[in-house]
Length: 255
Image (tube, rainbow, N blue to C red; front, side, top):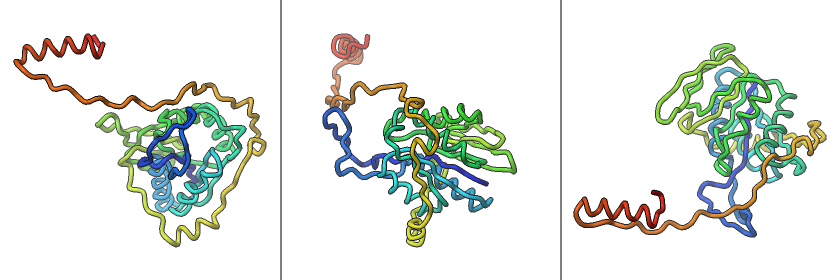
């Protein structure tokens, strides 16, 4: 069973977002594996331990991604690929195109990914890749069962569970509850230093920067306005209702 895991590095979820010159500052920020990708990594390792095979992570990003990749290698991933060429950094379209070209050169039965990245939260890349590869995709998995060349996935659907089946190969995106990611052991951390990490450029994968040019552009980045204190209405219920309607019309301007 050859498994590919799409891996992204994001801000630690405890980090405070600071804007400088209209961009998110990375000064002094702690970076981690995208939490939903971490579930994908753990699930890939569990499947490998049960069925045998190999797990490879594939990433697109700057040099700093190596720390997240090494964490995955320490958890039990066998090898990693990082496209660290700034000429092919862009939006979700760009990422999907570049990662698809890398995937086409791999042998795989299953592709796992987080269902969303906690930084941009677009949730587009795995779906785009599935379309480009012309293979099925099942999102928000909370349980995965493999039987030969078929896979059964229990997926979260707004508080309920849907069960789907598909033939391999398939892309599955992971949701919280799929598993509990392990902590890298000391031996695992030591082994990770020697595991292969291939760094690729646009030329290595045969991609022209113009060919994968971003389809979208960020015009402005800003923090949400600070929340104002709520207002408690008093008096008879009928009076409160009239006051509420008036406030919704004159202040909130929602009616």
